[in-house]
Length: 234
Ligand SMILES: [Fe+2]
Image (cartoon, rainbow, N blue to C red; front, side, top):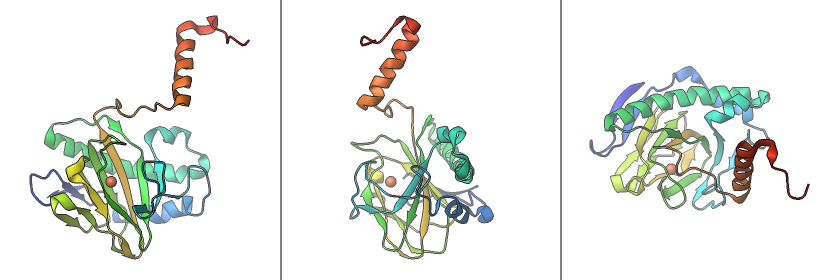
């Protein structure tokens, strides 16, 4: 990994790392061999959503696939190669983020799932901030997994930055609104990136859905009272 320095203003907090992975890592061919045509519930390319819920193609239209560290021990053996790719990709990203954190004396203890993103011709992601009303993040890391396409530049409009990525680049920057960014449409070929967000801790990343809350409460009761509690209906 080479530290290429700041992108734009030296005080901007946007740092570029180069040659993070070997040229022959061959992530794309391996990933497509593994999940390319898959219709598996998790191990497959999905039409990207906004905020994990809605399809908004005028805002974002691309394909994505997520993996996180806790998925690896329970990875479906048929998709083990995807887990291997994740491990190689995230090792490089972590090296960059650790260096980034050392520059600013911060510690990121929460790591979000890595989002592998695929943009075909015409696909893009409009201006957005990674930290906002629907999601919390402090540091964003974007890794570029291939060359051989045109368009797809990474733009941070409020930082006056338009960046043309190359394979092996990782760009790290704060996630908040002045670092809002967009991925311009690919005009030729296909672009792949791997996006991972970080936060100080998991405080803002708990799942508060009713089902989860019920399960958590049930687990808490079992832990506290063991076999003493029986369902009221039993
Ligand atoms: Fe983003």
